[in-house]
Length: 162
Image (cartoon, rainbow, N blue to C red):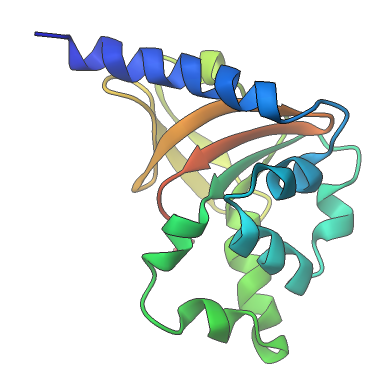
């Protein structure tokens, strides 16, 4: 029977390699996410929050990027409500909670539990001891997707600041 920890580790290594073949380098965080095709909600939220210019800036940034599927797990109407102009501050708070200053690669946290200070000001709990990597309650499903100004780690859930 295959070892589930080895399978998870192999998936974390193989996934960015497969994605890397379809995503050309020389793209910033926003362009890299947009070209992947599975972050349409995230990119729309970044634009609605006015964070596009920042995340296209020099960085480096580490972005824990929820997929469209992750956003779909939120209660009905949540995304639509957050995208309204009157909720921009809350949207900025949530999105910047997914961003850590600097470039943190999976090897930097492998085998550890740690906290990462977010751009929002709170800390994310990162647990990379066994069976993959957890960021708060979200699982990293693809790691180390390189962008010119940082790195993207794909997560399966939208994490919320306290």
